Image (cartoon, rainbow, N blue to C red):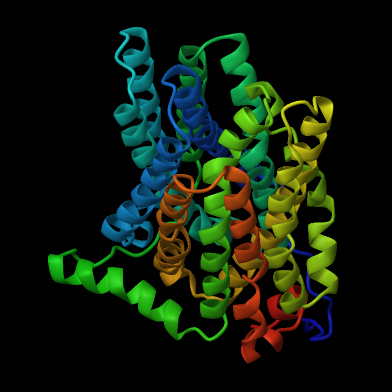
Length: 423
């Protein structure tokens, strides 16, 4: 009987695009497209159908941010206790019901600003729970060595969807009607619910019985673990800083484009393609460069996008389309590269049994800041033109990398392949 040599080469990791990841990616693409279509279209519907003001549109973004925070505060522990595929399927089904409600209200002539605010609140909250469960699910169906590539593909659709869904929303609103848009959006959630619900998720041990006390302890434990992590906490602070000011930009740039730039809904959001093209670059960058360099750059450089939006004018025509497309596309590319690295770092450094609650805690901090940014934008637009608010927000974005640069632990991180090879 021959003994195997201890020097035999390790087998190559299984390929990324197996059935489970393929289904998950397409389900996430539909879920992401649905949520972004909703959150992009609602402000346009408010502006075009209900003649909402810039401050009222910013209020919708504020409600979405509060929905994210509220859902994560009250339901974050379930991302580690429930089967993640079932939780994600339920979140997609609930979002489909929300959009179905908008269809009924629009057909019945009862669509109102409060209804749009409530739906934005619910859709954003359900999306936050869906994404927290997704972050914890990816390492269970993807080999460790493939995490960077997996997160690149997931971040790519998020980056493109953040903006590209806007073009689809604009076209549907211009060519058809809000009813068609809301119905199409609901359909994406239905398909996503069936897709992710059919995944073969590895079974976990039966969790202990949940009580009010244990629920509170689990809710707090994710935040405590995050704050104590000397690598993830400064990254989380940079994301929160970044989101505070980018949310202010997102809350008003549609209003700025439609009114100051005299653009049509279908002309907004064409830059998502640039973000999608950056998918081929992200894995190479994370293989070659250390996290501190890439994170600092991708946190600070999107400030240029906010400045680029100032170039829009009412008589510029195609120049407006090009300027806004380039600004949003560059923004999408930076965010995509950033998300690839931050998600992979978290999945490599955090044990899977607490990954869901730490992901939820991270989103609570980084997305919980969103309503503050949107509310600040809403207040500033009462006293300043949208262009001036964009300048303030862009300066804030430019300083968001300070937390990364100040962290000795983050500055000392090697590149992702070196971290992945560490047991």
